[in-house]
Image 1: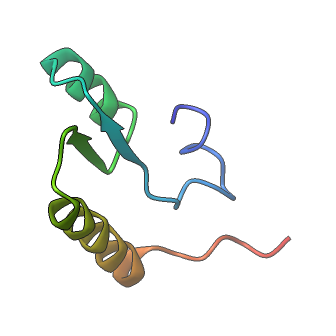
Image 2: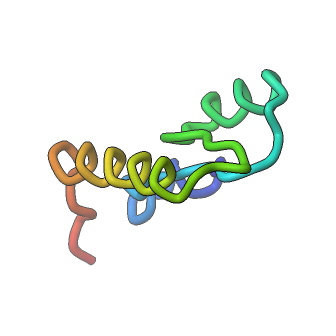
Length: 69
């Protein structure tokens, strides 16, 4: 994440962390590094789909397209 977000070509890509860790330090670190969502396993497929759809909906509305090369 630390390499992706500052990159002008990649920075607008949403980042979802999908992990088994529920450690508050891991969650805090992920968001500090600009994760857009943190999902812990196990998760029901419908719940996961909802998280992804919300991220997609948000970024479709607010994300800027990368500058043309």
